[in-house]
Image 1: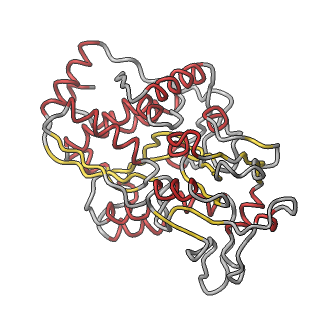
Image 2: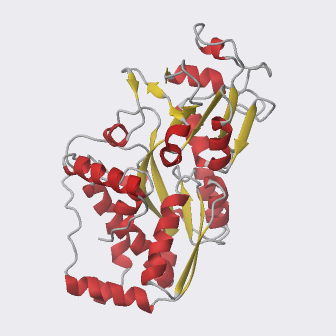
Image 3: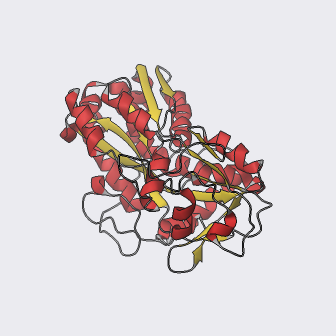
Length: 364
C-alpha cells in the first residue's frame, strides 16, 4: 500500500486512525451502493482484500506505466482534497495520464458527469433520482453507474474562537438558525438560547450546488414552504454562501458572531483558528472526531463520501480504469492523509470488488 507524507499533523492523525480501525468491526449490511450513513458494530463477514504479492504489484506498476490519456474529475469541494491527493500520487506511477481535478460542487459535478464532460464525479451525497434521470436522458443508464464510497466525513459546525457560549447545539437549534422561512428577520443568538448574547448571527455556508449544503438541509430537516420557497437560509446581509470552503473559513475567522459549517478536513486544516461545536443529537454533546464519525455517535452529521464513474468507462477507457483502480487501492491512506475517516477494512474491500472485475486478465 502506498504511503505518503503530507505534513506531520496528518501523519500523527493517520497513525491514530490505523490503531482505531484495527480494533473496530463495521457492519455493511446489504448492497453498499444504497448506503447513506456510516454504521458500526458487528462484522459483515466480508474478507478484506488480500495484500498483493510482489509479482502482482510489479505487474500492476508496469500496467500503470503503460497508460496514457486524460481523466477529468469534478464535483464536491469536500471530496476534492482526496481526489487531488490521488491524482498527485497517480501521476507518479502513470506518467502518461493527466488527471485533472476541479471542484464545482456535487450538483455541478453530476451535471457535467451526465453531459459526459468528465469521467469521475466527486460527491458528498448519493446521486439523486433527478440526476439519474438526467444521466439516462444522455445515454448513461442507471445500471451503468458505479458508486464508490471513498471515506467518511464529519460535517462540522463551527464558530469564531471568541464565541464562548455556543459550545454545544442541538439539531433543533441549528434548524431554527438556518431555516429560511422567517420573514427576513435576523436571527440572534438569544433566539436559540435566552442565555446567549442578543447579537445577530452571521452565517457562512456552502452554496446550493454543494452536496454539503444538501446533506445539511436533509440532516437538520430544514422545511421548505409553499411555492418552492427554499428550506435553507438564503444569501443576504447576514448570510454568505460559497462553493469555496476557504471563503467560509475566512468568514468565520473574521466575525465573532459567525456560525458556519463544512467538511471535517477543512476544520482540521485550520487548527486553532476556528472552534467546532459539539452536537447533541439526543444522547448528549458529541464532538466531531474520527472516532465519533466512525462509530456513528456523531449524529446526524456524519456522512459517506463518494466518487462516481460508469461501467462503460471502466471497460473502454484504460486511463479511467487505472485512475479508479489506483483510487480504491490507496484511498485508505490518502483519505486519512488529508483529514477524513478511512473506510473500515471490509467496507473498503467491497469498493475494491466493484473495480477489480474490469482489470485486464493478467492483473486478476
